[in-house]
Image (tube, rainbow, N blue to C red; front, side, top):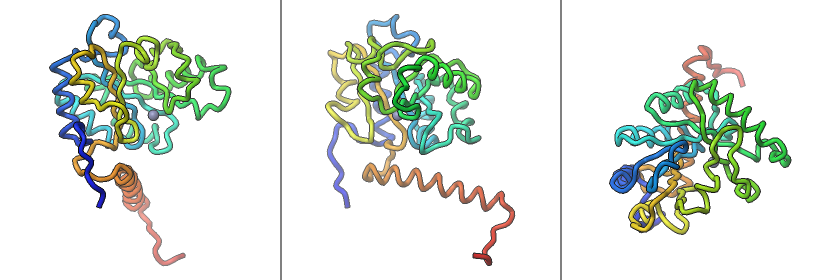
Length: 246
Ligand SMILES: [Zn+2]
């Protein structure tokens, strides 16, 4: 039995909602297109990494709490298929609820020379995302950013880079729950710090669950559920499930 680590910011959905309530008291929630108009703000962001239904749990809380956030969606994900009908439906539901869609751009997919044609590649993926989800895409964030990506802080193809000079290594505090663990500071630390006037908060799917189970078990559970759903889909749609030929 893994021990439950004491933290001021447990990875539970209850805590997730509490963080939004706390942020609402302190900051206006702004988007990547209007942060320039504010001296004090929070940008609430999500990188969709593993499981869209897990991310949808956070999206529903966002909507219930009346906040707007940006969901960075991958086109080349190892864990979910962007084009899957159920996933497209979920992405579109976020748009309908007033959230923004951004491009979660994976340099690794495009290989070593990606930065030679970065503008073109981001523009190409932006168009796919906009056409598929019938919405305007105005920002992008690197997936697993390599140092070279973080050095290049420019905006590309008309999209605002979530790691641009204004927003990263600037007076905007960036905090992320990447891999379901905290590094220097938790989101609660940042939201409770009166000295912080601007923040970009990045929360990912799958880590926020009310069972206090080890991080890897959360991922295993989410991926097993997705696989089981596929098997159920096959059995229900294939009409023939052959059991007597091996
Ligand atoms: Zn990512």
